[in-house]
Amino acid sequence: MRYSGLKVITEGLFGNKGWTPAWRDPAPKAEYDVIIIGGGGHGLSTAYYLAKNHGITNIAVLEKGYLGSGNIGRNTTIVRANYFLPGNSEFYSHSMKLWEGLESDLNYNVMHSQRGLINLFHSDGQRDAFVRRGNAMINQGDDAILLDRDGVREHLPYLDFDNTRFPIYGGLLHPRGGSARHDAVAWGYARGADQRGVDLIQNCEVNGIDIENGVVRGVQTTRGAIRAKKVGIVVAGRSSQVAAMAGMRLPIESHVLQAFVTEGLKPVINHVISFGMGHFYISQSDKGGLVFGGDLDFYASYASRGNLPMVEHVMEAGMTLMPMIGRAKVLRSWGGIMDMSPDGSPVIDKTHVDGLFIDCGWNYGGFKAVPASGWCMAHLMATGEPHEVAAKFRLDRFATGHLLDEEGTGSQHNLH
Amino acid sequence: MRLTCPLCGDRDRREFYYYGAEDYLHRPAEGAPLADLDNYLHLRDNPAGVTKDLWYHEAGCSQWLLVTRNTVTHEISGVELVAGRKA
Ligand SMILES: Cc1cc2nc3c(=O)[nH]c(=O)nc-3n(C[C@H](O)[C@H](O)[C@H](O)COP(=O)(O)OP(=O)(O)OC[C@H]3O[C@@H](n4cnc5c(N)ncnc54)[C@H](O)[C@@H]3O)c2cc1C
Ligand SMILES: [Zn+2]
Image (tube, rainbow over all chains, first blue to last red; front, side, top):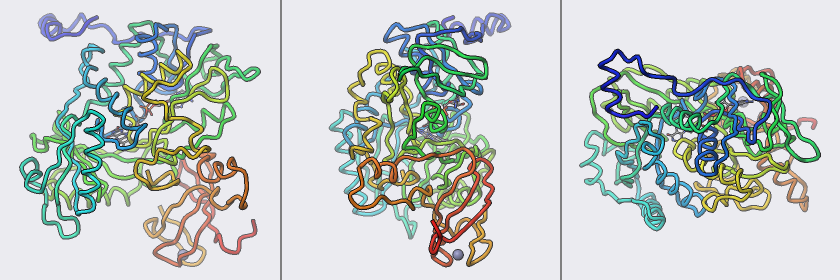
């Protein structure tokens, strides 16, 4: 079924009786050409692009819970292409271009909104670093505008510009940055994959990977054994456990990141604002809730909830930056399990097992990467060769010293 | 979350700096193969369950602590001083 404005109106007139489920609920077959483990954003987009770009449709996506139950439905939805290092820069630039055509491609409203992202700076040194970053973005073909203090004031008059610790010197505006509705991204890719014949199998946890003579043969699941010629591991925070089923030890440590949303308010914050010094970022959802977050809880964790010290820190940072939000009531907070890598950059690569591939290490930036990650993982799985914009996301780069440490914080997983 | 420091007693989590897994205690000897360094710096067991990791009592006695902890429940089952530990 194609969705359209006309369809919404006619369905509304006739009691909304004509809608059909957005995807099937098939039982697993005995064998597939490709199995994708993990029905998050990256797993679903991989399946979608395998079908769309490479004509491979005999695919199952195996999800242990329900589609979108992981980080794809838990993030603060910031979409940006403001990376600096070669390797990251071209990848996120590619992702941004895919975002810009995503809704018409998927025939699905993912509420992608290029409302502009403003990264604030608070010192001369930071300003220099942002000029450099802005130039890198422009060199990559993306957009960046340096705002001075008055320039920021024009966009964000409500900030506390004269804060004693972090007075606002200016900001880097990335006009094409913004946000999207996270669940809708999962649903849109799920529907698109399903329409092309991909089986989306929920409540199906993979608990073993079958390997014979160095070649992958399939997986063991809570719904029985399923054979496959190729298998992709795309499980974000659970990467270490699933990779261990194939005897791998990954450069990943799992950490919890929290997010918060307030009651719905009238439109007040038009941009995505990032306050790096307080590690705080905020935007307003289309429903009116202020959506904001901060840093990791900092210790390795698989609990999908955080602890109070970070709650306090995030609230303090928010109040420091924009005291006006103090009256808003926080409705909900939650956590997601992040696959933190030791250089802050991801992995999209083959493994030592023939036919077994892995996509992981998204740290807390994997939402904006959903389109390009699926695109590149599909390319790798279909052709056996890395896609040119993801060629540096190698699994062996840690051993060979080719790290992509965007923030230059060194080999400590929780610092990225 | 609270940690019971062997020297300072039961203290708030905010007094501690978290470093990472126990692996950091096993620094390869000089001249060790690169694979050992990769193991030491980057690769992690990353268990969903009981783990051992390093915490620094920054706002207390300035000792490094080896903490035995459950990453799923956040339950803490042991805290020992790294200094003077029998490996
Ligand atoms: C609070 C928070 C805020 C964030 N904010 C941003 C942001 O603003 N911008 C941004 O770009 N990124 C952000 N991120 C990061 C982003 O959400 C993640 O990097 C990205 O969603 C991870 O990829 P995914 O969608 O495939 O993960 P997930 O949705 O977690 O998908 C992995 C799936 O694998 C399944 N799975 C695991 N083990 C198994 C198994 N054994 N068998 C079968 N299935 C299995 C899980 O159930 C899960 O559904 C944020 C994350 C969090 C938690
Ligand atoms: Zn102490």
